[in-house]
Amino acid sequence: MYKFPIRFGCFSYDNGAGVVDTGIGFFDHMLVSFAKHGRFGLRVRAVGDLEVDEHHTIEDVGIALGSAIRESFGDRVGIARFGEARIPMDEAIASAVVDVSGRGYLVYDVGFKTSFVGGVGTRMVRHFFESLSSNAGITLHLEAVGEDDHHICEALFKAFGVALRRSAVVDGTGVPSTKGVL
Image: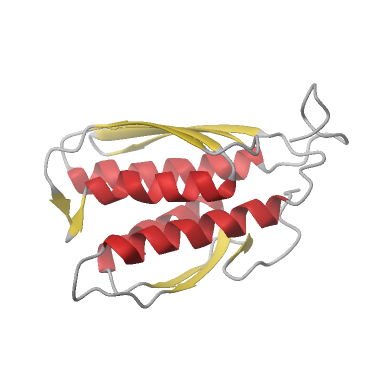
């Protein structure tokens, strides 16, 4: 059982169906990978100023998805709270560790080889996860290495999806904190 009892805009626990249209094909692919492997229902339609660049669209999706994740966790009673995953994709490997603490924080150690992958600036991957973790109120540690930036990025999004799902498992009855609140 998972702790996503409500459907908030674009995010719910589901069978991993992803319907995503941001106007950025590679980013859509990453979000669908996150949804599929996290087993989340995800519907995103974003219209941004792509004639300028991808920055605002990716940032805004991170903010909206983070807010939806925060809301979906509700009062956090009974959740596992922590989740982790280590996901390989060919020569690349990524790990994600999540703490649904209510405190947004990102630790990011990803070794991209190029400045762009699939038309997306690799710096935007970090910015997406910063926006998401801050607005979701989760502590997120991401690491990834490999030779192919597409594989690195995809493994990262898959690992995050799996780790987030594992943090949402209901395995108790109280709030998982010695302070009694998250």
